[in-house]
Length: 281
Length: 299
Image 1 (cartoon, each protein chain N blue to C red):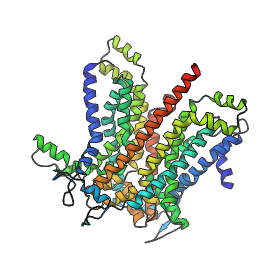
Image 2 (spheres, one colour):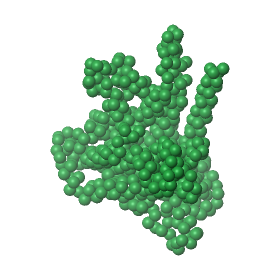
Image 3 (cartoon, rainbow over the protein chains, first blue to last red):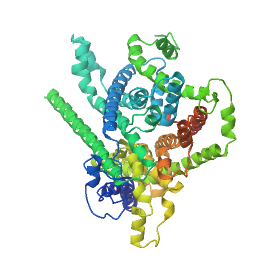
Image 4 (cartoon, rainbow over the protein chains, first blue to last red):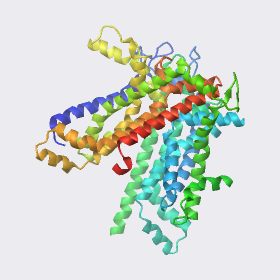
């Protein structure tokens, strides 16, 4: 498209759009450096300080503002995210492998899996709570919540793997088999390096989505809080800048994960390119 | 093992021509069983429990339609249903209006591949950050002493703060629009990127203006993206309760909020009724959207 006037207008619009997208987060980050404990969650900044960050880690003298109950919640959220990541990646890889051959009922299975990412958390969460209630099972973050997290993240892993395997040349694997390499070794040496970018993406989806997942967790977990539940707890009371400071840290954590992912992807692409060049030579 | 056989049944229904091979079956079984047990069964349970008998603190599995009658004769529940539908329609329109031009620019106008990728990544990064923190970030923006009021007063556009910005229906709409517009931008920009530039150039050579090109080429070709985006946004907005809880000061009650309160007070059967109604609503919306464009043909 070459209409330069339209292009300029749309360019300015897109810039404003990005401001709309990121503005609130930037404001939240600025306000997290409000002075404490008397500074409130609004402008003007009375004095710049890192008080609320120290408050988060319990390094300030106690005040009427209770510290966020994040310590144990953080551990639970991380363990839950790792559990979810492992199970949904394994399920995603195996089911996507199954879809490489056409089979009867593949449409049904496909929609059943994809349904998991479409059905809102409030519905599955409620359903799970009803089952737990009817069967007299206790709800726990490592039980009822965990299975629902997998229901949500496994479809992402599945779709990512499906996209990778669709572009994947099966002859490479068959060549390996016909040369007498065992199926296990073929998977390790041939298949896995080829699907690695997909596995990495699946892991990223599963980990971050589980780490931030809220609505499924709210219904399906018992008394023990995960991080999002701890944050939700502060919504009903007065908000202090300590929640903002926590928001900044958890967002930075998400960015660090994305950064690690990007770096690993870059490495894997570069390695693939090097192998391709060697093959040509 | 009985479970395995049961779930595999529909998959191998149209035998014997292409019976599922053993390997495929074993690869697929764990995932399918997981989804049946923890997705299909909970939803069916919700439908079942909506017909149970609710007493003050417990439910008994005696079938009745009392909870359903109760829902449709209660002003609170019915108004929650209307609010849900109203907020959904407004947010859907808002995400489309806000997101479409940005997707148009990123998908079609940016010719440099690197810049395009960077812009797309910028648009989808919020998806990987905490949803609750993004909701919370609107509090210091919209409040009476919030950033927007301060800026507007500083520029001199208004003399006294706009109070309706926070703890109102408007704040819920603003918050949801910002949170969900990325789901609109992504699919639309993707479809835009697939439009063959030479078609547009040909139209230009033949003397078509931008609006003509937009109406006859760009808009129809981007429709599948709009439908996919609309499905994502609809399903998520209809299932919302956290944004309204955090930004409306309990003034906006969606069906989701009703479910949360009912579960909180152990009124399981009522919560289940609200859940079933929400499910039906979503089913209708998604089916209607799929009517607009035949996705399987377009994608």
